Amino acid sequence: MISKNRFKYLKSLKIKKYRNQAKQILIEGSRLIDESMRAGANIELICYTKQFVRNSNHEKLLRFIDNRNILIEQISDVDMEALSDSMHNQGILGLADMPIADDTNQLICANQLILDSISDPGNLGNIMRTTDWFGIKSLYFSSDCIDPYNAKVIRSAMGAHFYLDIFYIDIITHIKHLKENDFTIIAADLDGESVYNWTPPEKWAIILGNEAHGISDKIRKLVDCTITIPKQGSIESLNVSMATGIVLSHIKKI
Image (cartoon, rainbow, N blue to C red; front, top):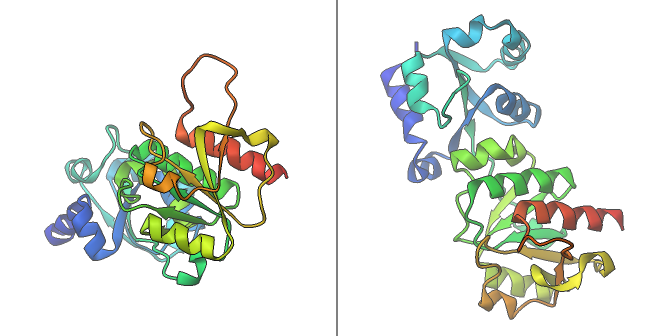
């Protein structure tokens, strides 16, 4: 059974301050753990309940974990409930190293998405999944975005953290640096040129703004062009994660 000290440490990782200090996160659920291992995540520990082991549907995952030589510890239902962020947990969670990129050369070496004040964890997780799906390998976060290692973000991203390079930036400084290196700065917004009539330049950075307020005025002043997804119906706006998928799908067709 898991020790009191280890349980206390795992529980501390539910708080951003301690996650950042330890550079470790909790990953919860069989699908997320499976995807994270396939992505090459450095998983230090797997904890599961008796009930999880007894379920024959989990045999394949348990063999996969065993083949990776990961430390395994049993945990009580009560302790799992205390560590879980889910209303109905599956009885398994892992302790993984936080996947933080440190290659500063990547700040200007590839076409990129920049997130300005994204606040909803579900939206951010879906943006991360979508970004990886379309082959964009780096995401850039303004300082006031929601923590990408928030448990709800991790759950909705479903392993995308371990495929992406995540950078924290001073967004104004970063945009100015990109412009000095011949990047075109593009805002995705409600008013702009139709994305379907727009041809992306060779070097681009697309900015996605806050769900309620869009891109901030100070950033809008640095934008070279604005693109939008033309509305056909009556709904006021698209979810930012859905809009991300549409824009990237169009870019990848060209």
